[in-house]
Length: 366
Image 1 (cartoon, one colour):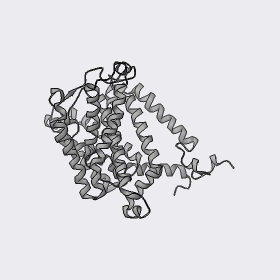
Image 2: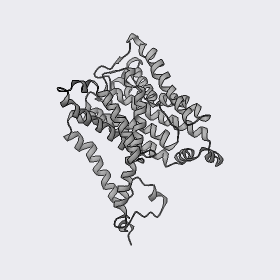
Image 3: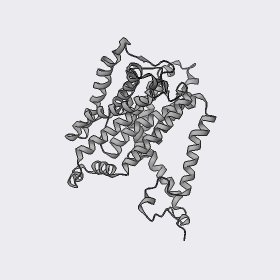
Image 4: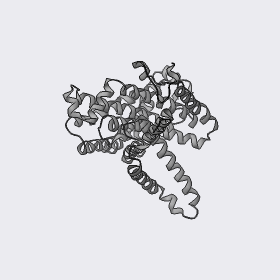
């Protein structure tokens, strides 16, 4: 009997089937539909405003992936991830504006793609430096260490020294035509959107493959019980620092990508609240799930945009609402976290998992 049509679940006969990306024809069909939606339908039907919202979602996903890796898979609580995103953004910006690239690299549009890779490595190494205390401390003390990364990196080094390079003051201007990938100048939201899709897909595949490897299993073991993991022969310090490096690496990519969406970059783009926001994203999306980083990003960005659209028509009658929208946004963020912790503590990813199981196990889904 063909295993394709066996009822109530998916049956695997070997290891390769169990670890295949797309395990059934139905899943393959869903993924084809997803790719058509992302690469064809959204660019074709969405206006410029919603394309910019999609870009913000992609940026949030890239930032949340690193936080998800540290908190959700390795158990290392971080509240300073915006610092590593800022390192990636400023490294890429300085390489583009200040580094004397050979003319042929500028002509062929290789400077910016190479700057993304270098920025990712610099942010990863910088993340490891602040991950070193994880060898001796954890929990509340590690939270303080990662918060120190934010204040030392953004408020002291970047604001006080890096921003002064070239006598620019606080902001680095990114003139039109600065961001170029191959023959394409990234000068519109739609071009930024396609670049965002490629970077998100690549980063998700990198982390997903790591999680399916020995490294990922070591991270999960450390998250569940670091003492037991060490007794099993896992080098806890090594894998913790590797987690910080990979999280910083992805954060560096996020920062280097985000400068393509800005006319100028300044330290105000990377406040400490952004680090807290990314933690909230994975709490709402679901801790310990790559789907959680994606669902949480979509939920938070779309809800805040809809909230802003609801406030704008009331601005004529209540102008203070628009002036205080930042505080309204922060209040909505806090209420959303409280609501999810009470009513859906496992996040949106768990609800998605339940829906898939109900469908896959029907008619025996009870």
